Length: 519
Image (cartoon, rainbow, N blue to C red; front, side, top):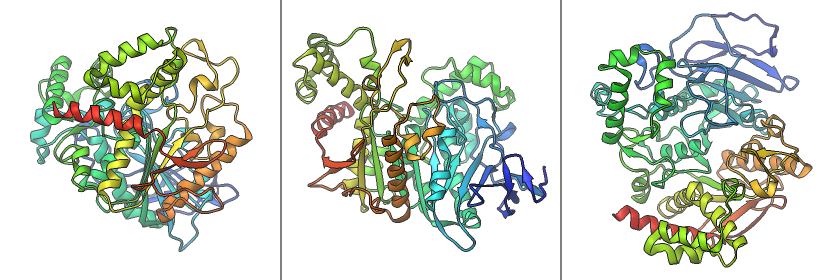
């Protein structure tokens, strides 16, 4: 273990040592000494060897002072998404990072970020997750790694028997709970308030937030929740499959690997397991294990058994618009109508009323809207609605509408694209939330309005983490989302709230989804 001495370290000026439950850590002081950054702090035991596919164990204590100036490796993953890539991968990846401006004796609000990536990719060290902007606003910002794909969500009958809980899979979700427990035990040492913790995430991270709000294992580990584009309220994107189905998938996977025992499975190299998993469809993702997820997330909320915390949630106006606007074969009135009748059957008339197509141009807009709604919008809307109806806490809803600037000549899958083609795309709000526009990859030709909007969003999110209310600091008013009014804050060049004009779309989809669930 590297023992640091006071003075200059590779990335800045060394901080004072901080005592954690695992031992002493020393990070870096930046921004003229006003912000301290700690990277790669373990929050659980390395899930390797016999601990592969087990619930996270307690941190293994270390001697001396741990170097917390470098991010830990990302969890094992393939190169799945163009905007997510890491060179340093390992099974030994259960670490977290934090940024704090707190002075001695302070107890600042804490925000814990759960990254997206379809539960297959991502990590807490992505540049766009930099926590400096939140730290400047008096927030202790924490980002985490959690196990992904086959390492995080592999279920198998033998693992179920071994667990002592009659459950397997969902190790990635259990990692998130372990990280939140670490925060409860340690964050005060960094100037954070363990009694004022907000979890927030995007895409798969938002799905995870919806699950943690539902899970009894996460009770009292956080006090507010923010979801950006995603929730476990749909049978489409990232469905929660029954334990038995995922056990069967796991047994087939083990046989294909030639591993007839847990020992043989755990004896396989991480690279071999990852390579084999890349050929498996569907991929490995959260399931209904009966433990961290005792029953379907939607059923828990419908019964009012979720953790009753304030919720701020929403999604982007054009989540996957580019998939429609940039494809060679554009929809027509005829093709759109035929597709809707084939897809929705006896619900098609209601769907076509909500997504009209009186012209080819309108057909394109309706198909782009429906694609985004079916991907993310409807499920997030349903989460917000059910939490409002069965919850006991404030709810705030947003729509991120900013058409993100696109460099002239930009191509998406070989097709020239403009900001109107792509719009307010999936994951496009992350850099705005983190005040990290200049750290985005690929580079974007940001305009002054983008920096203004980003500062407003970081402030809204920080205000909510502080008090459960996003308002303040001279920002445009953000009304609560309430039965009878249902006001939505639109985050764009001009920030304003409106009534929910898109509600007929989600109600039509909800009628259809209810019929499907009843079958």
